[in-house]
Length: 300
Image (tube, rainbow, N blue to C red; front, side, top):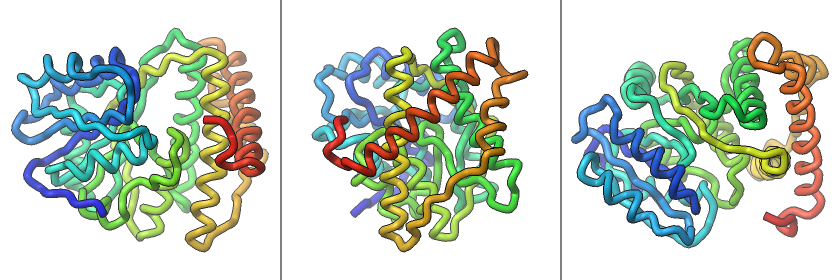
């Protein structure tokens, strides 16, 4: 059971696994937040990695309230929940170890949460590696999903990525946090958002709460990422079925056509980016059906 003692305004939770260099850039950005130092804490949760992270945490410890927690390797959902168990904040804010936050990030999240205290607030994620074509394509896909949802007010926002997310600790605890039966870094944020909405809560976009995502990808990493997104999508639908909604909604042809058109006017080499988005959808579909067939037997 999750228990959060509220003493501070924010607890920032950062799950990490064997990426000390990326984590260092992340915590350095947290150390220069434009927010009172005595109003937030940072909890870094090492998800069973082999890297020594004390050399990353110790130099920052004299600048902000930061601590390192460890757990056996259980996936990012469990790591976030472990961090929440240790949190003292009225609000929980989540980002990832390969992200850098804007100096005004917490202030923007706070303003959105004060305006909608019971909302799940998601900020804007910006690709931090504009010269990496695969990183650009992955962020374009997320941007498209957000844009598509905003154009459909009847259905509203239904998904935020977990690298820029905040909410009041009470509703998070009441929902038992992220679903730890979903071990991949794929789909667990979608499942959390869906469950949040099913509890009658709203979702609010804070577009001025900026996080820069420095996820370096190769073509192999790009394929694997979207393959895992497909696996996570099947796990997501399996969890929904357990809650009584087993329907799998398939988007229309128009959704995919607009997706392929989305890079034009937004990215360099748009035709190449459209091709990568097409490849991503193939990887996603194959990952989905592979997970459906083999489930936990599929390699991590």
